[in-house]
Image 1 (tube, helix red, strand yellow):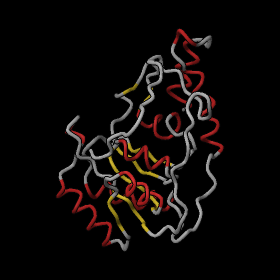
Image 2: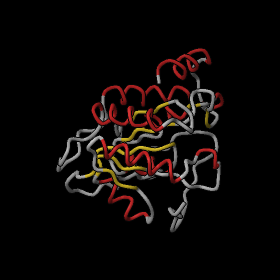
Image 3: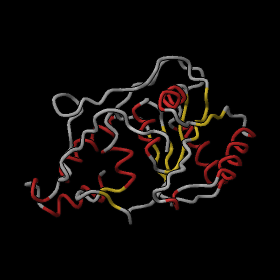
Image 4: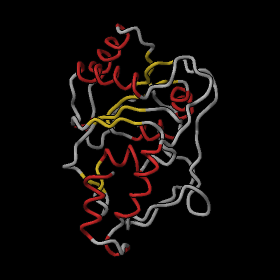
Length: 219
C-alpha cells in the first residue's frame, strides 16, 4: 500500500493480552506535527491487494472528493510516503475512509476520524471485539475522537457525504486551529477500563456472563 515498515517490527503475544502504552512494553507516541489545521477532510484511500473487496475504485474516490468540495470543504488525499501522510493528517480536521491502516495512523496523528466497515458480525482476536470497539476504544490508546459506521465496505457516496458532514460537526477539529483539543473523554476512559474485563478466558477471573455483558453492551 506504500506504507511499508522500516526497522524492527514488534509483535505482541497471540493471546490478546493488551500492551501498555508506556515502557517497557510498548511506548506509543503521538506522531502529530504542530501547525495550523487547514484541511477539512483527508481522504484515506485503500488500494491493497489483500481483501480487495474493501477497496473502492479511483472513480468512486474522485466523485466523493468532488461532492465534498461542492459542500465548500477543502479536501486532500492521505497517501504515501509515510512522512507526507503524517503531515496531511496533522493538518486535517477529520480523516475518513474504510477500515485500514491509514485510519490507525490518523489516530496516532491526533486526527479525528470517520471510519466505515463491517458490523458486529465480524470480530477480531480471542476477545471477539468488533471493528467499532477496536477503533473507538481498544485500539485507540490516546482517546482520539472517532465515529465508526457499521455500514459495510461499499457505502454509497451520498451516505458517506452525509456522515462526513455530521462527523465534522460532531467531532471535527475547528478550522484553522493551532492546537489539538483535549483528548481522552470520560466515555473513552470508562470503556477503556471496562475493556480489561473481557480478556480471554484463560487470563480472566471475571465470570463469563459478566464478560459477555461488558463486551456486547458496555464497550
